[in-house]
Length: 187
Image (cartoon, helix red, strand yellow):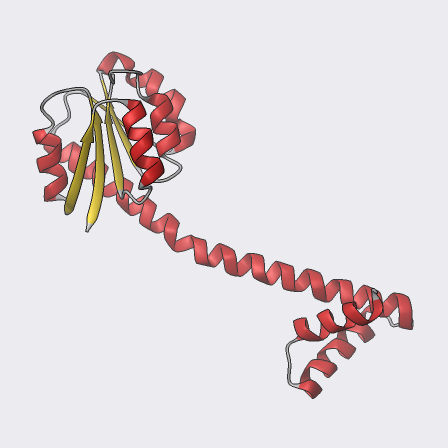
């Protein structure tokens, strides 16, 4: 179930809702103020898309877009005279800014682009975590090598070979051997 949030002070949001349903969104929540939107985002941050039609009843909408972009892809719809100012303020946040009136094809393209960019970014998170894990592993092994060099007078290549040989002999990882060495020598 794809969820979307529409933030608009306009009474009639049927066109946006219809376009979102055509893009596969089944649960669409509509609110009229930035404060209401912030409350909903805080309680349910799992929205696949947030559409802000400015101005809102309590603010213009740029601040809301910056906050919301931390959780979901955001599309801001504003008047043509505010377009360049909004684009400038929101360029760092990754918010898609559209000028009113928005055509059906333009809105559909923006929705697909925003959702696909979010999906592609989500696909990189596990990769980033894996890289960070590898870096931490290398850091621990390097500390263990330095410890062997300091306490046993090994060269760097001897320390490297020692850790690898211990890992093979004990059938554990180099990280486990390095952690054990650090526990033994850095008390």
